[in-house]
Length: 439
Image (cartoon, rainbow, N blue to C red; front, side, top):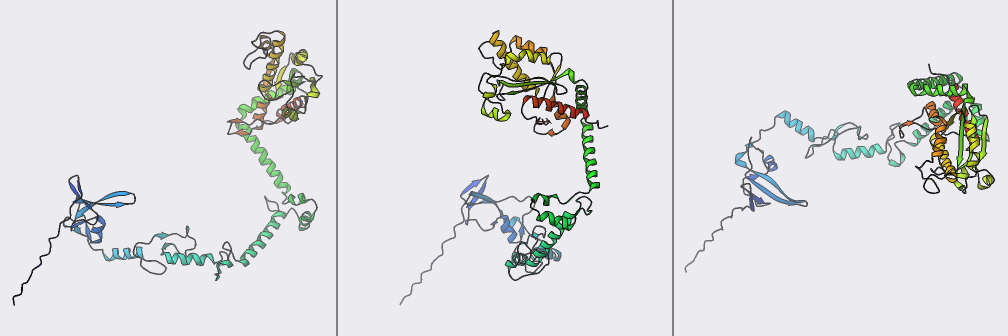
């Protein structure tokens, strides 16, 4: 019997083929890199390091969810072995991986934790996640005031146990009572317990708001501080304030040489009509005070402000009829208006209407905003318009507006009737004149 033996030959291993070439270097797909080629991380894991000036032999291309990426491949024969760590370096490497609380060693360096950012940690340093979680859970059930550690987190609310919360409440109540009985500036007692109790139990709840009381010496001190601050502010703006004070004193010294004028109108538009006009001298004596029939219906919103209705002006004279009296009242006097820009605009419009009706010289029956009848212009030029009282009073008060970049305009507060506003302007000028200089 003859036996035939068949020898099987293993196929030769096929070398990895690059998918393309870039800059003369082959590019291999993931999992098809020849032996001896490694990435930087693979070299570090193998204890190898690139030599100075070593260039890559090829590239590795792989795909991620964001697209294709390429990394450099280096040949192991071109690298050198990494020098082993010294005992000191090994200790430092171990310290970076060791938790200072449980002494366990992690696979990678632990991050530094700070008690300022994580107040539940007992110390700052490298702490593993399990120890940090345990410390946080213990911190949540520990009272932050007395340090008592409870079994359940429900026993602590906002880092405060029931006993400490009651102690704090009682302490705050005692402090509140002491504060109400003493001067807030110098802590001198200014009220008794009986006075505070009587105020708290009174029918008028506003009496309880009268505590704490400031003692008389502290009131006087505050008053002096406010006055000194005011005078210091006036000294800083004296270049503007000085002429205003001088002007106000001139008006008060010769009130018969000045006229205070004010109007009430049908609105705030450029073509608003006058419904009331008043003129006084610098002392508040009436020179003219009359209603004016505007020839149109007064809007409800305007009547709500000044209280003048259509019924009030039905039998009143038109502006042209009172113009001679107005001219006589202003003749030879310097005219002061609180809001000069607005009131002079209203007067100019009424003058245009009047002269255009009797001596047409402008296009159209109603004058436009920028047109000026020659007779109206002549009348306006003949008047001696003085300083705007509103701007002067704004300098006197000294409230700066960052939005407008100037002194804030102050409300007149005259009641929105022409005569009342004129007399209030006199009071404002007298206030500016009587204020002592800050020097």
